[in-house]
Image (cartoon, rainbow, N blue to C red; front, side, top):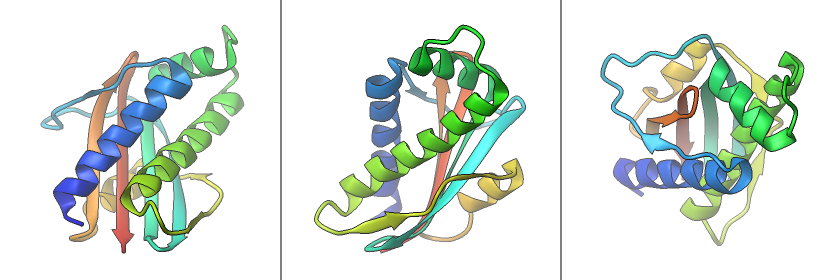
Length: 149
């Protein structure tokens, strides 16, 4: 599996999850000079056929809008938004792994909140690492993974 393939699968998986679960469009974005605006960041670890780490960072306004779409609440509390960010990390990781290693088993840890610094270094941590940036309503969403298959 090449880095390009992992990039493509990660983008396609994230876009599919956002469209089917949140009725939200995600558009791949150029990362040059783009920065997150006070994001909520989550990560999880995977083991089995693909071992490594996934993380996402979502700008707070974008996450608030995703939360409204997902739960139907007009003013979702921050704790509900954090839970949704963790669940979104789980959904994107699961979809990505299902497409990368479709006939193999992978186990996912419980997603947890982390720092933006952890997320940013994950996508640059080696040959088998990648990071993608997408525009969603209300801001940016980035997804990173570092996998050994």
